[in-house]
Amino acid sequence: MTAPAKDGTVAKAPDLPVSPSVQSRACPICDRADSDRLEAYSRNHWSVEQCPGCGHVYLKNPPGYSALEQDFAWQKTYASEHERRLQENPVAYRLDVATRFRHTWFRRTTAQKYRDWFGSGKILDIGCANSKDWFEGFTPYGIEISKELAEEADQLMRAKGGYCIFGPGASAIWQFPEAMFDGIVMSSYLEHEEQPLKVLLGAARALKPDGAIYVRVPNYGSINRRLVGRNWCGFRWPDHVNYFTVADLRTIAAKAGLRVRLLTPVRLPFDDNINALLTHDTMVPT
Image 1: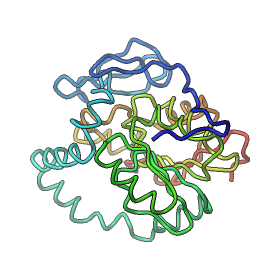
Image 2 (image 1 turned 180 degrees about the horizontal axis):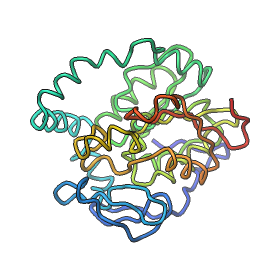
Image 3 (image 1 turned 120 degrees about the vertical axis):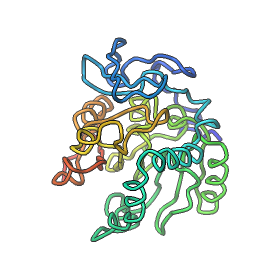
Image 4 (image 1 turned 45 degrees about the horizontal axis):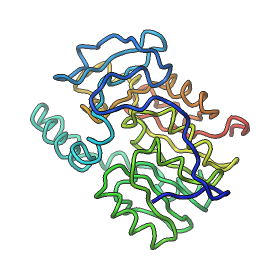
């Protein structure tokens, strides 16, 4: 569905390049066209490359939004990626899966984190899947590129006062009114987005002045990635199309008028993920 802005119109997204299926794209951060292929991190015809300008690493030839809607929908790629890792590293992968409870030790629940970060009110989850987990005190909204999952999420969200838009985040985010959300969630999403700057610009527009955006992306700068190389858990071909370092995240956030606050700075060098809150650059950091 399309949500109108306050004046009854739908906001126009900025005129940034749109990626058709299986094509060559420029750097999503600095828009430089040329890049250097990283053979060690590429797979088959999926070419992972590095920008010689800003240094960002990204998939040069992503499958395109239409393919992500069905052929590379999350629920399909998750299953195939599980099988691939099980075949290539059976012992290590089984051990990792069996001990994932360790990630919850001494940590707050998601509900507690959302209350701390956003307070209450309207929250938008970009890449929300079927959105089964929501919490008291929040009105849920979502964006989902998989048609099947978007339909499930929309039904659940409408029961709680919100709704879900089916489509790419880079265009769907502009269908919401300005300053609508107390919080926006981009958990394991931005690495899938072909146009991350366009999404962040739209999110900054839809965020309240005192709101926050939670971002979780694979940490390309982690020590673990350097140690295990192409077997690093952050590599997924072809649905991971951006590989962010902290510097990358700060650079692209600044282009959208946002400031980055790291949530786990002490363990970051050893963490396979970057967890951060993004706020309007006019906000005083806490």
